[in-house]
Length: 158
Image (tube, rainbow, N blue to C red; front, side):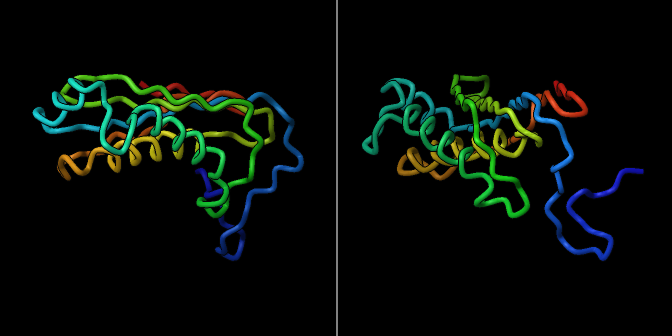
């Protein structure tokens, strides 16, 4: 049976000790979906996702990268990591939605799953913020890890 790695023998929160782990290349990819009402999506697409607040995709990309770099500041037991790269991709998807994907890579002793998930989430939240003047009926969903490589196991979801 697996145990929770962030809980010590006394049941207290504990940062995982990675001092004995090998430095390897770590990669993670996460995604989020941002869905709009049909009329709002069509309006935004018709104006190339430019709003009075600015360019939605470009602003969300910057927000996602900034958030991924600051993951250890907002997720209490995450290790601070020097990211080698962080790439945010935003593309139209089915159902009047946008698919936000975040790829993160570093060379380190611990994985970058949380950084990828944080980057995708923050980019999706930024899209919401940039577009909420048009409607609050925007749904952020399906925030999930798609893949993780490096360390003791590789994971590919979906």
